[in-house]
Length: 626
Image (tube, rainbow, N blue to C red; front, side):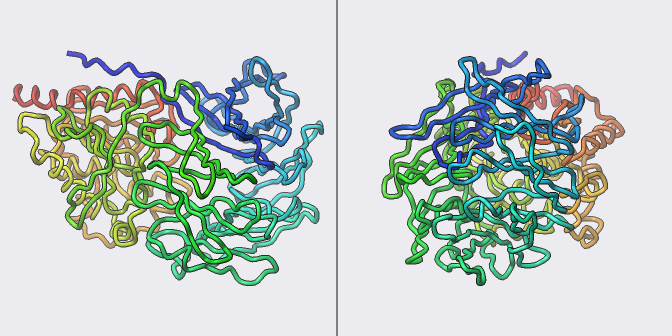
C-alpha cells in the first residue's frame, strides 16, 4: 500500500537580507523549491511593502538568470539593486569567476542596466557606501589565500580595483563616513580577526584580535557616536558558551566588555545602533527562542523588547524614526521581514507575500522532557495528543554545537501535515542553554548527546499504546551520525532510522573531509577513547546490530561531509548480507550539503516523509516473514 503524501504549496524561504545605506530599501532572496526571486521592500512610513522581481537575464547570455541561491543583492539609495553571483560549472562546482550587475525594477521584473565580469571569484558580498553616495564596494574571495576589494559605481563601465588582501574576508561594516572598512579576516589556521581597510590609502591593518585561538569579529558601527561593537570567543571573556560583546569607543583605547551586556545566560548578538549611536540593539537567544533587547551605552542598562515567540536573524536596521526591521520566523510563520514600531512598543508588522500563509502552516509548542542529566527542551509538532499519533519522529539536529530553533522548518511541516508527530530535542551539546549543557559534548562526540537521545527515545515512547509503531529516529549531518549510532546502540527502540548526509565516525570524517570541517575534527583527541568504546562510536563497526529499516541519503556535491561516508556504509551493509530496497534504502541526489540537510529536493523530501510513514509497517511485515 502506498501512503498518500500531503499536497502542500511550495515552502517559502527568505534569506540574504540587505539594507540600503539610508535604510529606505531592503532586498532579500525568496525561494520556493527551485524557483528563486528577488524581493525589494519599501520601508518608508506608514507600513513596509514588498515587490517581487523575477530574475533578469544577462544581455550577453540569454537564458542565464542573475538570481539564484548563490546570488547576493544590495539595494542602493535610489532604488536600484546590485546583484553579485559566483559562476558554477556544469556539475555545480565553483567556476572561479563571477558576475556583478546593476538592475532596476521594470514592469516585468528586473531590467539589467549594466554588468561587469568579476575575475577570480569564489564568493563575494556588497557593502553600500554610507550617506547619499550611489556607490558600493564589492568584497570578493578569490581563493583560500586571497581576497580583493572593488569599488562599484553603476554609472561606470568598469569596476575599480582597490586592493588585494591575503586571507579570506567575510562580513563587516563601515568604520567611518566612507573611507574605512572594518572587516572580518580569516588568515592562517582559519582564525578570525578584525581588520581596518583604508580605501583612500589602499592599506590595511589588524585592529581587533585577542589571541591566535579566538574568533574576533566586528558587528556594528555608529557614524554619529563613533562606537564600534565587536565580539570575541576569548575564554577569559566568554561566559556560558556565548561570544562576548565589546565596545570600542572613539579615540582608541582598549575594548571594554560591559558586565550588564555580557553577564546574562542568554546568547547575545549585537545587531545595530540607533541613529544617535547611544543605544545598541542586540538579539538574545535563550533556549530555542530569540528576542530583541536594547542596551543603553550611557547608563549601562539593557531593556528587553516584547515580541512574538520565534527566531530573529541579522542583519537588522534601526531607522531614524525609531522603527526596527529584522528577519523573523516562527514554526507557523515562514521567514519574513518584521518591523517593530519602536523600542517602547510591542506591536510588530510582518508584511508578507500572499503565498506565505497559503499552507495554513502547523504550529509547534515547546515541551520539557526528562533527560538523564536534567530536563531537555524540545520543539514538538502534533498538538496536545502528540504522543498518541500513529507515527512519531525524534529529529536530531546537526552540529555538534548547534540547536533546533523555534522557526519555520519545511520538512517538519510536511511531516506534521502527513499526521506525523515530530519531537525535535535540544540534548546536551546544544547551544543556547548555558555552559553546563554545552560542554559535555566538546571533544566527546557520540557520548553524552547519544545518551540523551536514547533516553529520550524511551521517554517519548513511554505511555504510548504498545500497538503503535515505535519512534523513527531522523538526523541530518552530525544528527545523522547520532541517529545511526542510536539505531545501533538500541536497535529495538526504533521502528526506523533516516540519516541525511551523515558521517560514520569522527576518524572517518577526518580522513575524507577538507577545510574547516577537517580542522574541527582535528580538535578532537581521537586517540584518548579506549578501543572498545571507539568501536561503539564507529557506525561501520557497529551497524551489524541494526535491525530497524534504514534510509540513507547524501548529495554528490557535498563538500562538508563527502558522499564517500554514506557510500562506505552502503558497502558495509551489503557485506553484512543486507538487501538494498528491503533492509535499507540508499539515495544519492545532485545536491550539496545544505540541499540534503534542508531536504530542498522534492524527491528527497517525499522519500523521507514516506519512509517515516511506512517504517513501522515495514518492520512489522519483516517480523511476520521471520
